[in-house]
Structure formats: C-alpha cells, structure tokens
Length: 333
Image 1 (cartoon, rainbow, N blue to C red):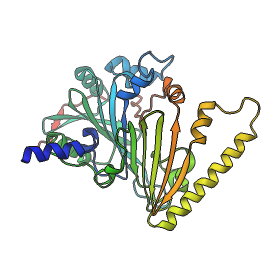
Image 2: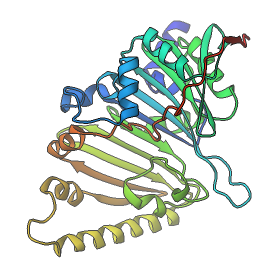
Image 3: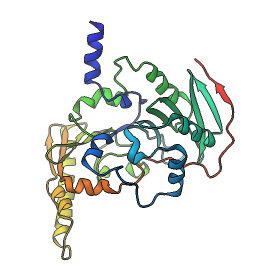
Image 4: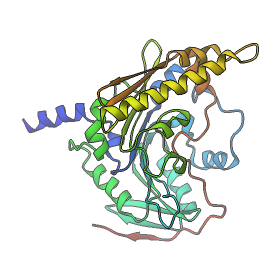
C-alpha cells in the first residue's frame, strides 16, 4: 500500500529536476527534449560562439543546445538594503548528457577549493564578487547555486539522496503546480518582486508586461505544443477588483500595440508574429486574469533555429584567471 501511494504521488508530482530545488520566489522549468523534435535546435553547430562558451565546450565536451535535456531554476530576489535593490540569486538543476570526468576536471580548473558533503564534491568557484557552488549529482544531473552560504546546495544534495520519496518540491510548486497545463514544455510559477521587475531578471510574462502585475499576485505561465504552441498565463490576484484592473490594463496595452501595427511601413510585421499577437486574448475569472495566445510552429522554429546560449535567467561566466584548485575539504553530515 505504501509503495502504491508513493507511485501515485510521484505521478502527480512536478518533474524530478524541479522537486530538487529549494524554496524561492520564482521557479522556471524547461524541457528541451521535445523542442529538439520540433526544431533544429542542437542539430547543427552554431555559426559563431562566445569565446568563453567555446572554451567551456572544448574542455567539458558539453553543449547546452545539443546535450541539455531539462533544466529547473529557483530564483531568489533578495531584500533591498540601504536604498539599493535586492540582488537576485539563482539555484539550478541541469539534466542532460555529459562526461562527468571531463566536466569535473573543468570545474576543478575554475575552483578556489573543493568541499565534500555526503560523498559529493562541491566545487567552490569565485565569480564577480559571488561564490558559485556546483555539484555533480549523478551521471546525467548537476546542481548549482550562487546564494550565500552552502545551505542551498547541501539541501539539493539531501533531496537527491531521498529521490525515491514522493516529496513535492518548493512551496510554490506544492501550492500551484496542479494549475500548470499538462504537457507544458516551459513553465514558470512566480511572485512579482515587491521592488518592481526592473530590478530583477526573473521570467514572469513576455516583454514589459511584468510592470502591469498587481502586487502580491502569483503568475503561472506556460507553453505547450498542440496544433500550435499554446501560451497561457494565469495571474492570480488578491481579489476580483485587482484581477479586473489588470485585465483592463493589458487590453489597453494590446489595443495600442495593434494600432501601431496598422501604421507600419509596407511589408508590415512578420505574418507568424502577427498571427500570434492577434490570437492573444485576456479575460477575467473571479480573482484571476487569464492570458492566452497561439504561436504558429513556423515562428517557433524560427525562434529556436539560432537561440542564444543563455537558456536560463543568468548564464555564469568563468573568472578571467583560473584559481589553483585546493584539496577537498570534508563537510560530512
């Protein structure tokens, strides 16, 4: 009975890479396996790469476009201090195909030291005034975090050790994952930052619409392939009035942008982009404002044909000079 209950709970749970994440202000999940079937992503080498990324690929043998299957990001906004905006930090779980030996050697060249926790090496990498901690959890799984202290990376290791148990993941995921449409390739559950979106790099809703979000709301945005790529964003406001006000502001925004399209020069906008934009609808349901749109596959393929390397909120850059690797320090618990 216990085994059956665990199986049923896991079937309803979020993906494993998400459930390993810590509590945070926003969660973003990306599944690239179906994307590769629908597009040319990873099927041909890009025309040119950033030199630092090229060096990473050469030494580690890992290409995000070709080898990354799934990724989950926890986004931590940080509190404002002395009039300065809070500093956003990230924790990540990556699942894909990589040579753990080559990746481990590459991480050692970047590390100032290597600590050991529950038989896992944690690579301590100084980067632009922060400390990035990276751990290889399995043959296809890696964890990273640039939060202060080791608690977050330790917690991800602890949860990996308990992977067979039906734990539900971060609080946002426990509370709202059931609202994510089945089959979504990309989805996010996020709370807008109190200090305003201009101070953070989190993914909420497309473009500048983050500034329209009501305070103390929760956003659930997703994309899933059906006859087209169906986009959906649910904005859960504190009350009906806030949801109605948000829906009215978005409708006004859309009306202005569509009016601008009419006055464009000969040729007009890309027909696929125009079709996606024309399909955008907003309606209110009690304390929720729901935005939907349909993106033609042709536009989706164009978008993914030459994507930027940064598949997450913030791609880490290696330090300019490699620090000498220190001997592992044990922090066994």
